[in-house]
Length: 597
Image 1 (cartoon, rainbow, N blue to C red):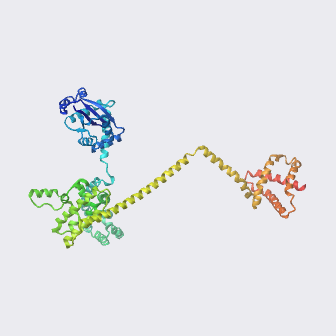
Image 2 (cartoon, rainbow, N blue to C red; image 1 turned 120 degrees about the horizontal axis):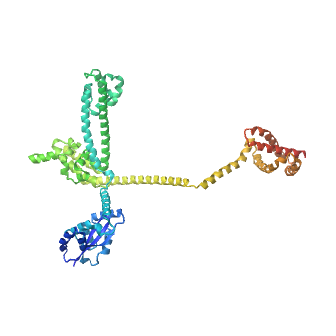
Image 3 (cartoon, helix red, strand yellow; image 1 turned 90 degrees about the vertical axis):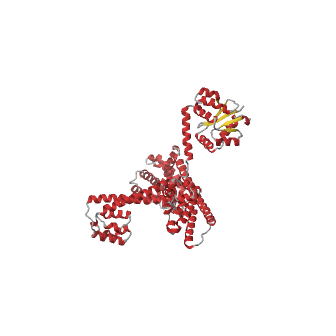
């Protein structure tokens, strides 16, 4: 008896189902076909053994990628090792994908089977899966499938944004279309403005320059010597500018109205803008080709390489083509016509627009086109499958084509392909190392900028997170500092010059400031107050015998008298100076009393 298990992969998780034991699995096929649509009958044959849900959408995507690549994921391995019987020979595991079946059989040792009755069972499981798993509804299962499908598709379509060949295909197609449109519109401007100034067509051949001149000249009768300098700027040729000026004076064209001139100038300005956009588009195409296919563009040019990629559909398709196909790419009609009529097949297609075939002699055009197609095939494969894009190989291949051209003309033997490729490999390694160094420097600069930005953000956040209490403390400290500075500023206002006096005066002011509380009674009880003052002042004036000390004491007294007289004048505009003048008067009275005693 064989015990059949079926592995079913769903967007929400893995499901392991068991079928009833039979001698041969093929006997189940008619029963399964009958009961697939009936849930009750299907339950009699199939039962759910285990269900392993995915933890997140990212885990589901990882498992889906592993199953598509034929790799056994850890979640699948754990499910099978846990719930399948230990006797592996009696177990047959049915899977839908032969890749994952081969991987399970190789790694875990279980016999796997695909197709036949397994496909019918999986069809029934897919139909009734939301009924087999408890808590799973049909709506949630559909949502999970939709989400996983989108994420799986995005993961498969991931590519390097800088190496997208779709933009090259669109830009070269638009460039060809612009060339056709600009030629058509320029011919319309030439015919329209030729009624008024027919001689200009013969002088100017370039379409864009003709449209610029038609826009600038307008009415030919208004063209004079003053506009000659501007004409030279537009034509980039002094002789042509002089010829235009002479032709405008003797032109055979008809007169034209102002409204017609306005329309001609408007249309010519549109053509000029289209030609300018065509130049910018060509610059964009060159930059994209240097990023996507640098070797191919270095070999045959950006325009021809872009046309080859567009005609093949993508750079990958071009890399898969043999050199014989690349040689006649773009000449399919001529090829099939030659095969039909049994005529000569074409020797070249799009690569005819490269400069090499035009430079070769008529008898060597076929040979050089075959050689050039060979080198184009090599360059496209290098560009498609190399990790670091470089133009070194394209330049070396171009040198080989030049040597082959000179060989056809002069007979000089070219270098061997092996030697050229060895040189190219050495140069490519140097270029890759230089590119890696540049990338490292850029990364270091970016990290430094990021560190500076984070430090600035941290500093700003620390300043913003200061508490209001700290702010009040800082505000309260500022006025205290100002109060301490006030006594140092007062001596400068009073005109004190000696630093010794300026240092000693605040101390005396402090002693008198304590007595200011009793200042109202000084006039009434002068005798009572003068006695303690004598005791305080006499001990300071006792050592008058020394001449130096007497001089030092006499100078501040005089300065006090002068300062007391000048205080009312200097303190006039200030309101706070009144208290100081009152205190100085009291000091004078006390000094007089001391002198009388």
